[in-house]
Structures are given as structure tokens and as C-alpha cells.
Image (cartoon, rainbow, N blue to C red; front, side, top):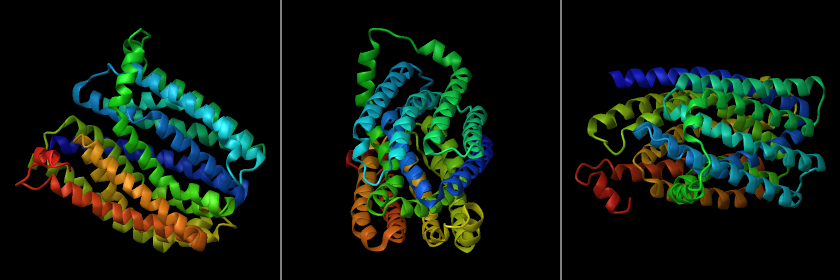
Length: 423
């Protein structure tokens, strides 16, 4: 009972924070969508996708690794090398974007300048990532919630100012960069005792960073593949369909993301608790973790039905004229809430069991299927085809993950035996 109370308490904090953050992000989306129009919003969505993928690459799976180490062993020894890794990789990614951004097709001159400015946000994002990782690892969900809420509100104020001044995309991303710097400093203040005690420069730091790069490579691959899995359709659509189609598709996906806040809250709170159990997965522990999953699955069915029914009024209310073509994609994408719930739950369960290689293989297969399907479908059916592709691959991934997880729950095989057999 105590375990359920802790999970419920942390999930409530996460849900409250995510609702507040999501409201701010919804307002940001509305301001950007209405201010920039479908074409400008589509270009902004592509820039944001590049930053999200870059943040995933430069984090290199170190956040999940550090959460697991802090939650299970209160081990902070990797804090300094992880910060070094993230800053160094961010610098490398920024350099590559500055060099190769002009090669991106259908990117306007303002969009090019904006991308080069916005990508600099990866440096403060690295520090912010380390701060939120500490809070999650220590299960300080209340503080984690307030920090993320502050992040969303600062970005909202930045976009609001840009709207009042009728700024273009260059000025908008400039203000967003400033907001990222501010929130990184706030997070560092909240985690100052840990940073002061465990972050220092020594001759061993490079060796430790190199060791961690090798150790976290599997988790890094998972983090990157999960982000790529969510964003690859938008990126391919940007290349093949242009900014207008990307804008319509982005309006649908942003609305879907808002519907996932409850699930994200529980899964964010659940992972540190799962990780603290290590590989001690007995039947009681399995039932404990399965209960919130079944509850979320029921909400996924309900949420999917509601989104299908309210797709038109939601799109019209949130985005206004020019986004009617986002209604059908939202109806299609809303079906994916069901496999999404299964996929996220089984993914964090496999991560908690330290089955990174297994999970990375499944995600890689899913990404390849998504890319191939998008390249075939988008030229013929555009953003509608991209919506059906995403939904179909979500279901395929859930089937593969469920079949894989079943090997760990067979009493006659057992977890260690399943691992020995390569599952």
C-alpha cells in the first residue's frame, strides 16, 4: 500500500505540473500557429524537431543512466563526466548544424538564420537536463514539477512578448534561447548542493567521460531512436511535402501530445521507482507495476474516443482558420494513444531490467519501418498518409514489445534465462 501511495503522490505532482506546463505550451502553440500561419508554423515545427533530436543525441542516454544510478544506489560519481559529455556533444551538434543547415531544402533565409540561433539552446538545455535528472533520480517530483512549470511559463512569456511586438521567427527563437538560459540557471540553483559536491575538474574527468560514453551508448541509442520515432514523419514530410503540409500535420500532433500528459506524468514518476527495484522483479512487484498500466490503458481508450469526436471543434478553437486540414490527421493519430500506452510502459519496464540492447533493436526496427513507409506513402497521400503510417507503426511496435516482454514473464523460463537466450 505504501508503494501505491508513493506512486500516486508523485504522479499527482507530475500531472499537476504537466497540466500547467501543457496549458502554457498550448497557448504557445496557438500564438505561433495564428501568428505565423500554417506555412510559418510548419517551418518553426521543423526547427523545433531538429532541436528535439539534437537534444536527444547530445544527452546521449546519460539522463536515464544517471536516474537509475541515483534512484538505485544514490551514486552521483558520474555527474561531472555526464555534464562534460552533454556540453561537448552539444558543441559538436551546433557546429554541424551551422555548417550543413544551408543544405536543408525548402528552408527560407529567415528559417536558416533562426535555426542557427535556436540550436545554441542545446548548451543551456544540457545543464537543464542534468538538473532535472538529479531531481527525478532523487524522486523530488514536487521540485521537478515546479521547474518544468517555470520553464513552460517563461517560454510562454517570451512568445507573448514576440506576439505583442509582431516579431518574426528570428526574434522568436532568440527570445526562446534567452528563456532556456534563464531556466537552466534556475535549475542549477535548485540542484546547487549536488553540483557543488560532485562537479569538479580533474585529470581523470576525460577518462571517466570516455568510460561513460561506452557504458551509456545503448541507452543513448534508445533515447535517440525514441525521439526519432516520434519526429521522423514530420521531418520527412518537411522535405517531401513542404512547410504547409508540415504545419497541418504539426497542429494535429501538438494536440495529440496534449492528450498524453496524464500518461507521461505516471510514466515519468514510475521509472525511478521501477529502477530502484533493480532486477528484483517478483510476481508481487509485477502486479504492482501492472495496475497503473491497466488504468492508463482504460484512459487511452477513452481519450482516443474523445479526440475523434471533438477533433473538429478542438482544431478550430485552438488553431483557427487555415487549419481545417488538420482535423482528419488528428482523428487518425488519436487511435495511436492505445499502442502508445503499451509501448511506453513496456519500454521503461525493459529499461529498468537493464535490457537496453533488446529495446534498442525493437526501436531501430520500428524507425526503419516508419521511414520506409513514409517514403512510400507521403509522395502519394501527403500528410494524411503520414498520419496512417505513424498509427500503424505504433500498433506494430506494441505487438513486438508485448511479445518480447512475455518472455520475461514466463514462469518456466524466468528473467535471467530469458536474458541468456538473447531476449
